[in-house]
Length: 294
Image (cartoon, rainbow, N blue to C red; front, side, top):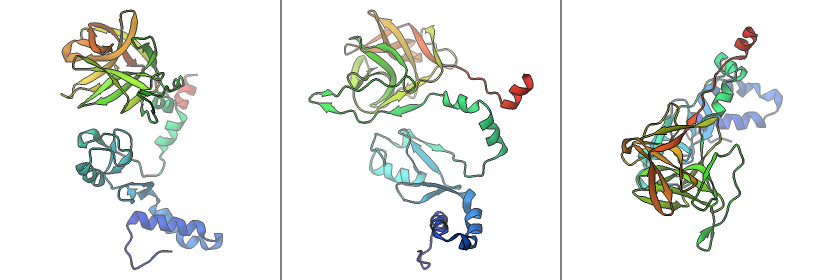
């Protein structure tokens, strides 16, 4: 099964041990069981798609904005040759990646308490951005898409023609812009530099978590405001909506400009009064604490 003359990394050694273990008769498994168990906490059975080696507990692991993970060294070498994700080829650069920290250890008492509490519910109600794939062309237009399920997106307004829009964001030039996704057109609308843009690439949809819309003005945002992107100067942009010509439009609060911007018929319009998307706080309480109070 394994050529012993060829040195194996720790992770590949563990991989071959597992193959050997599960292919053996029950009476013969004890010979490799101890080695397999002692290596378990140091290996995660997830592989870097660049070097094809399994991640180990001392590896530096980085993620792209589209969610794919690689060894840091592998990813940075790949990004020197192409400013796209090595996995899905979405636009990416060294300024759009970040480290992630994976737990290679055994489950602890704290993990068990987490499962017995409503903390998992709190985790489920956080903003999550999901890339939209499969948008196809029909001549010069995008193919209409079915509306998202209620838990998949936040419907919060319309476009200038009255079509329902959903909270989204798009990568455009050096900015990440809050946008309004229109499934019936397969596009998203965003504003930038005095213009309104119709975009059909690099769209990410925001899930429907526990939220509320809070009124604010003059570039201010309330506590818990959801960041929907950033400007080319690395300033946070916040998701907001406002009324314009009898339509509720999605857009961005640009704090240093003291206004909210939104796209409308190919131009960028603005207002000083708007509603900001805010994440609701979820109280985390363990089952034991609940029973004690009862």
